[in-house]
Length: 497
Image 1 (cartoon, rainbow, N blue to C red):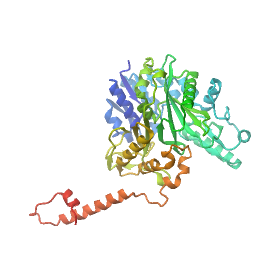
Image 2 (spheres, rainbow, N blue to C red):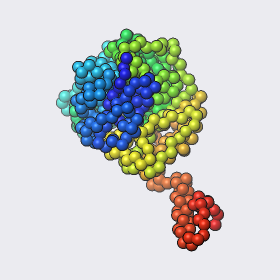
Image 3 (tube, one colour):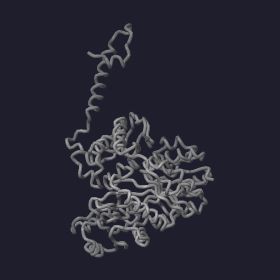
Image 4 (tube, rainbow, N blue to C red):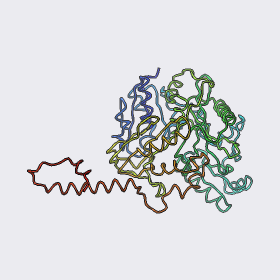
């Protein structure tokens, strides 16, 4: 049995993992950088240890320091969350060497599926359809030109070790080939320490659809259906939903079988995701495998009724899956919106700073996975996502209505957030009808972006006017003689002139 888990992460995912651990009676250990000393995950854990300065390279990516803490506190296992060391084969191997359970797949599987070229080769051998492209890394400029001309424009140049849209360039004209190649290599080197890139045929107007899989150490693999992840900016997801409004029951079954086949072909263990590109004719192609928990996993939990973190821990402890494929049924509809500290109307510029006021939405069908609080200073060193808003409805229309209501209730001041932008998405016709693909944001720019350059809603203006009026009344109140009883400030602020 696993009795103590060190969570090698921060923010909302660290809290989310710790909550499941607490329900299982498992002690938790937090690690934190200098910038995260007052973070919620530090307060929530049973134990917490400082591991270095604010930059992630000196803290959350410092595997030796994390392992040192794990041994010091006698943790049985390490949960990596997502990002940071979650898909680092070397870290998984080091955990094995130290006798600490890594809650995730083996280092061999991470290595195989983490390298996009090797993953493509593996899928081709296992019979899973892949996007036409190269199965070898590009070495010279001449080779790149030859390969792109053979495949035919447009193409995507991608980092072999990449993810999150980094090291990726769309090439539409021949003059863009070499500049895009060099830019992709440079970004890949800076982000992943590996400048290997390859080429794939660009699928026009694709849908980004992924399948959640679970696999135990005894060869049992199931899928938990799909998530539609096509609302993206800079190749990064903003809104996800399940079930996908695109798939038919027949295509869902076929894709699910291929997802299971893909996981079985590499001897996968744990929770993972098989990502596909799907065109409007419902042709689908393997894109990549994420050998970790996904940011958007809560919507699958909501419609399937499974706690994926608990399943990860039980699998890592060597237990058999208790869920059969025949048990998997989607119930209702779930949507997730990622809440970022950024300004969508200013090219999604990050907006770090101190949160002055926070009101999170409540009510039936609403879940918030977050980590911030009033007075919390959002650091500049990490991803600007501050929470995930997850809603459920008995059908897609109801889920959209619940999300609109929840976004309306979600109030954060002191920083700019993506909440107004997400509200616009929920009002966009293409989204409401479920007729969208990865070009959704670009295709709806006039609706989604405030082209007049004004970020103030009528509600914002009303709040400011009311507050100014309140201040003026307070100023008048202060000149009243002290012998006169003072009235309630709330009554004064609400009184008509």
